[in-house]
Image 1 (cartoon, rainbow, N blue to C red):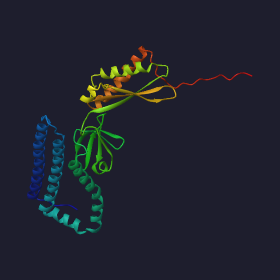
Image 2 (cartoon, helix red, strand yellow):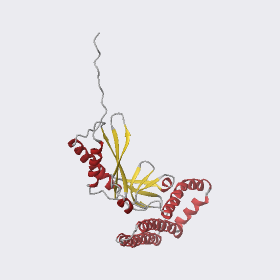
Image 3 (cartoon, rainbow, N blue to C red):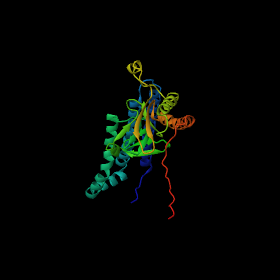
Length: 283
């Protein structure tokens, strides 16, 4: 079906499109200016940034939606098409309603995320057991997570609402890292523990998270415990605090390297499984 649009109607459509676009860009500029000002605020600001980004996404959606409706109902040829489409209601309405259920669930999920704040823009979270990264944006439909490989994970809001969310930032970004080391039964366990503590406390990412009472009582800044007696050796676990999960990962990898070298210098053996093959005796 060909729609005949005269010059006057074409100008009206152009004005509506231009007005919608300018309103969105103006809102984007104002909200971005507010976000930049918020980021420079020394106080906690993640809640406001999250709200502002969600507000911008919502306003953009509404402006463009009203723009489309305005085009349909102000241009006679398009208005007649719209009436024809909605007049047949039955099957069309059923299909539209079914298709919009998931979209509506995502919108409600996005609103709930902003209202109840299980996470905010900038938080380090893990959704379920696999999707982990920093929250980059929350829209009406989905949440964007930037993972550690700088890839973007786009998750529908309705799905996030039903998953378990691990948030490493929402209250306190400090992380207690549990780092495992194994030594042989013949190795000096006290020397091994001292080496682990020394290398942990000398790392630049280490922080002392003891309370004043613990300090007064002489509690060790880094705790190392014997976890298990295994088939080929003893497992030690070090408890080391860092400011963030990223700092903890760096500390852990550095310690695996430095502690290994220190173990070698102090005759601390690291056990590993091995097999002994016996030759079959000749009759």
